[in-house]
Amino acid sequence: MFFSIDPSGGVPIYEQIVHQIKLAVADGVLVGGQMVPSVRQLASDLAINPNTIARAYQQLQSDLVLEPLRGRGMIVRRDSLPRCRKARNTLVADGVRRALANALSGGMTPKDLRELFEAELSAQADLIETNGKLN
Image (cartoon, rainbow, N blue to C red; front, side, top):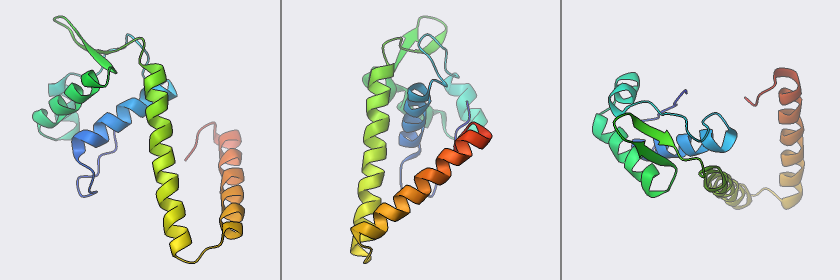
């Protein structure tokens, strides 16, 4: 699994890890019963403090996404997919809401936004057809 961490981005690193793991579960990259990297391994891979990873994993346990497997590490809960899809939808809706608010306050009209949205949606669909994945 690949993580993209932005230390200067304003979102705490542990929250970035939480979001990315939830998105990976929602997308099927991580599946129920699959082990996630150990705290030590992920901290080493990302060159960040192990306490940050531990905090993210604790949050994911609280959110019923991960569960400890005694003596082995953490695994994705088998019943986490619906929760992760809901979390993904909430994250996307929040992003769309912010983008719309910025665009409207910046002077774009609803018609401009619809045209922009349709053009971008079409371009992304073409990318999926061509490459098999969104960029």
